Amino acid sequence: MALVFVSCADSSSKNELLQFNTDIKEDATPDVLSKIMEAENLSEIRFEKGTYHFYPDKALEQFCYMSNHDDVLVRTAFPLKGMKNLTIDGQGASFIFHGRMIPFLVEDSQNLTIKNLTIDWDVPFHSEGLVVARNEQEGTFDLKIAKDYPYEIRNGQLLFIKEYYQHSIGEGILYDPARKAIAYNTEAYTPLTDWQESSANNGINEIHYKYEVDSRSPEQSHIGVENRIVAQQLKPGLVRIYHHSKKIPELGMIYACKGSHGENRIAPAFRVTGSKNFQAVNVTIHHAGGMGIIAENSEDVLLDNFNVTPSHGRMVSTTADATHFVGCRGKVTLRNCTFNNQLDDAMNVHGTYQKVVDILDDYTIGVRMGHFQQLGFTLATANDTIGLVRLSESFFPYEKLTVKKITKVNRRYQKITFNEKIPASIQAGDLVENLENYPEVLVDNCNISNNRARGLLISTPKKTVIKNSFFSTEMAAILVPVESGHWYESGSAADLTITNNKFDNCSYSGNNQAVISFVTDDDNANIAFKNIEISDNEFNTFDNLILEVANTDGLLFSGNTINSSNTFPKINPQNAAIHIRSSKNIVFDKNQYLGSAKEILRCDQPSKLKFK
Image (cartoon, rainbow, N blue to C red):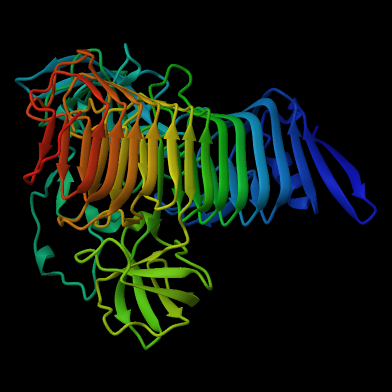
């Protein structure tokens, strides 16, 4: 049974200590949930070391708008709402979840620490199949699918059946089981060409919308297209895939898939919102149906020995980013972490752009959230400073205003009333960003490898240090972007130091990204990034492009060593090692180039800049 201990902290208050033992291991959800919801002044929760299963059937149900996830009705056994000064100590326990659950739902809490535990799912949200036959002439390949991934074929469509969930073949990528990493040059083979223009339609082009429509949203993205890929079972556990138009996957590769975009990010391991001083220490996440942690509008987050790694011989850990921080402030620290085999980036830190659509009066504007996976996001609270941005003219605000109030009309449209008058120059189509919702960032002694996509995405103007870490990613190891037109992720980096790291065979997917890249979505020469130092790093690479710098004022590249690894054939031999455009005040000093690119430094404009 679950044990409850009550101890008096002083004569005026009682702090409750909840202690659970393995008697509840068959389904820990009812006991854990009831005790948390009954507690009045909870200070600590401890678990006896062992394995605990959590099922959704008796869990608390709540609808969640989650940034960079699908907005869904989810269930949890740990509703940590309005908590203060709480520690959850797993003492080495393993938590195994089932179905569509969020293990830890943290809202409006302060000084919360979760430590010494492991999170996994009994049945994962993704599926895997081994490529055992291929036919280039017929355009087919065969997948051997283990019993761990039950499936059925409906009307020629392969569907994987889970506990409380199912997914189509959808988004997928190749893994190399020998390396336990994303396959070399996977972009030539994946994603599968799952869609084609619908065979018949009538009048759909005559549908007109008064307001802007998000064509990427689930309700819009399937209009005008139909399934292209067809599956056939040759025998139980052996499925043939037809009509893939890219290269046919090589024998021995593992195809991992997670279902359709807009339907496959439903169960992050941690969702932290509106909270201050959250810490996760000695925590391992083997799997989640989304991100390892999504933190929104929170302040001061520490992840120490926070690890995302696959289990049970699976190729995949989390099905999205290992960590993601939206609209946070204070400081975000990642220390002694390992992020392996997740199906998206290791970390993404950014703010959020919203688009001005109405000027309602002298003090009020109407704004629209751009991406369907950011709906319901709280842009700001009273007295926050908002920047008005017109990216065609500058990446930096042309005006700053303070918020009086925000009125949420619906999950995509809201009204912002300011304390000051709106400038006469404001236009529909301008963007707004919260200038206070950017954190300082420290990444120290972390291992980021074998995953899909990038290592770190950094979009914060606050001081950022990335040091003493190892990177081996299929795309860029470090991407510093302004993503204004797709994800509407705001923030342009300044005061960024990248030092004493090792970059080993990064950007091997065939996506043609530099190992470290500074880029914007907008095709202009405006400065976006300032005061960058890249020093004393080691680059081991099979390909050419190490550094891409655009829209930057002030970058020092010094004391770095660049070696040829010859691990893979070059994918983009036409590239120079370093590419500079629309930038100034770039300095190279005391670097050693031992690579094999025919051209080390390429500038788009005439320049006296030299690599040294």
